[in-house]
Length: 149
Image: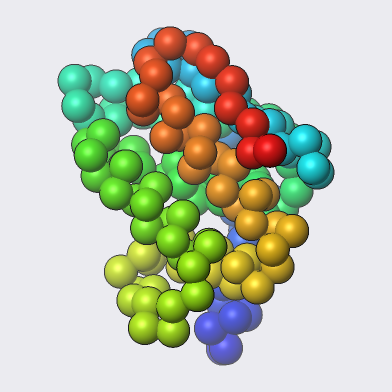
């Protein structure tokens, strides 16, 4: 199986059966994200236990890339520290916006499935919406909104 096919399969799977797609009643931070260019809209719920993300979920609607990215993000950051989640944000932002043929995709695990999005500039905001919303949730425990404009 070609790597691109595998990556497509991961995106399709996470879009059809998004992980952690639910409201988190006891969230310590709730942030809304909106991409006005395509209409993607999501809410990220975080439950912090000190400096550790004990639970994370999301709700909303969007394209396959947006939903798959949020699903993958929610799986990967659960159990991580705030600092580790912020490092993942930086890695993902670089993956999706900076051309780097030397990039170590294996270290990103399933998140590497989103690497092809960089080739479609109009879709980058779809893939990064949940990450920007997560970053906002980590930085601002109160409830606010973020836009990818």
